[in-house]
Length: 178
Image 1: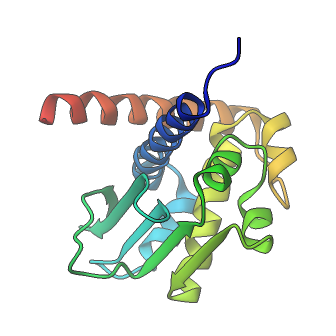
Image 2: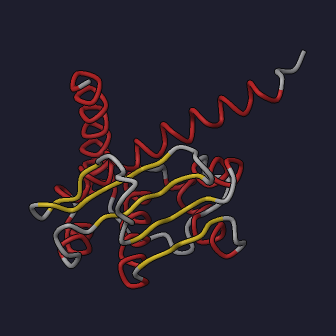
């Protein structure tokens, strides 16, 4: 017996929501521990905001730079983020966030819309790619990235441990903060 479509849709929605939170906490940790991501984030102005969401009212990641660091936050409906990345459908977000399709391929195939500052968008793409290179196993990263960077095993393992611990801490602190 196969699960009904609404059940599969709910599972995909939960997965996308989890992965957006993972990206948020992972990027927040990586901007404190990875030199390349730090350089990209440093060049963004304080108060810079970006969001990544699923149209029309799906799961959303919202981040803001303050005190030189980028941190997950809550989206304010009154202010428009400096960069707004929107997946056109839950299925597109699921395919990208489950590593079936790379971010650049999803954008090229018009599965997502990017609105806002172009140079800041490119900085974010470089941060996401660096995060993928550190946190994902090489065989997955090579499949979804346009160019897989040279990264030593030590740098990859140390970075991945720091990011995964940071994500875990972010989830735990988020649970206790509620």
